[in-house]
Length: 360
Image (cartoon, rainbow, N blue to C red; front, side, top):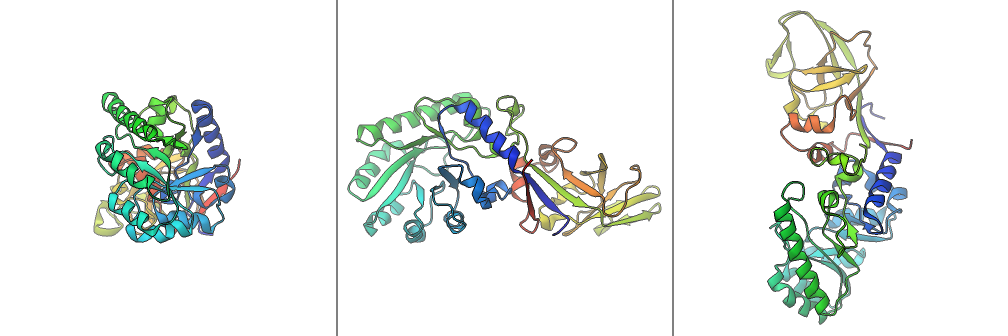
């Protein structure tokens, strides 16, 4: 196996789920495992998946992949599918989030049975049914073989804007009232993802949450871990493959973006932007060697990068390197250096980086 790999701690993941359960009480957890479970590949671990009655993905293809590895329980596709995927929805017994009327009309046209969750537009302004159109949707659905099994929405600013979030919640409550007035009592009612769970649960009118990054143990805003203290489950590891003594005034890597200002010891590590290790970290990021930070020097290449180990003693080829360990270097620190969010750094770790599950 390649010596550059992402280590995923399944025991820590299970501990995180238990902490979330304790916080939300008797509500259902629908884990969000889209984008390869945020890059962790937990979506490929059937033992973990079978602990949940329902899971959430973003794409029909992601749902089909779960069926092919043997997951037989409910799968919910969060995003409005493409109209050409309707046949697959029935074939693989997939529940979808519905918000677009022509898609609904096409489903009705097939005269087949489907389960859906109605997505309500409450202020995200991405997808969703306007509350003024909801009665029309319901009327169409009641004349079809489609079952409204759930109702949901998404809070756009639950990490920082209380007033806006509360307006979204009120719109959602009104939509729920309309649905119930029409004789529909949905099995699943959900609006809280990670930030909604941390800042607005318990919401007495909902019965399910959709945790994402929270399960994997990473922060979604400053001090979010003070609310539910989940722990990071991933460490990105590599190894040293080459060490060279470099004299003063020597360029390192492409385009001579770094030139030594004294005699230095430089190590090569087999991880690069082809693995999802961002080029923005060139000449400013760090890795961990023997418990100490080693600065990245020169441009990060597609398959490798170089670091300065001059001030770290007894380093040899084959020594382990940590790209992030959640203590000395955190995912959030890397995201800040790349002017992005920790979600993106984790999700963008390429599929050529092996995933190694540990259970301790």
